[in-house]
Image 1 (tube, rainbow, N blue to C red):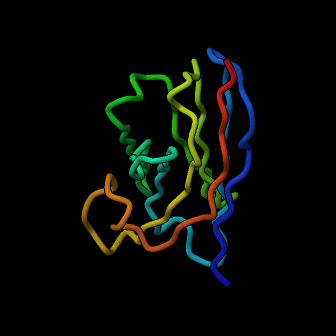
Image 2: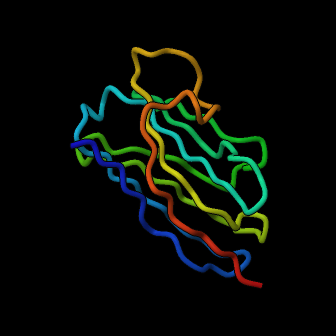
Image 3: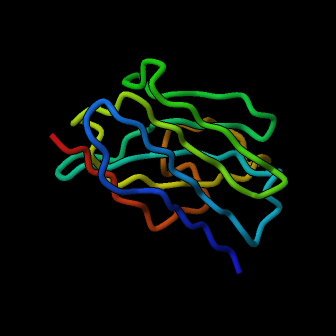
Amino acid sequence: QVQLVESGGGVVEAGGSLTLSCAFSGVDFNSYNMGWFRQAPGLEREFVAGIEWHSLRYYGNFVNDRFTIDRDNAKNTVTLQMNNRKVGDRAIYYCEGKGCPRGGGLRASDEYDYWGQGTQVTVST
């Protein structure tokens, strides 16, 4: 059974830090590129960060070195460390997986094969 589960969401103060985790089971994890997307109320889903199987990293234009994506192939997990949280970071964050042989980029959500249920992140003021 393929399962992709995000965790770590919650409430964080503006300027604070939060780390999200994603466990991806039921696939050969090291053959998947992974991505984090987010969607705020009334807005389209937005690319946050992506990491290829060999750990090359990509970030959305808004990130500006505040976030770091990483993966641990031994544990079949991908993480998103978010520092200096801003009010605009409030959203549901989704973990997504894309099979490497599929090709293409990592910046469009509809290019991925699997999606998690999301985890809510709220930035308090």
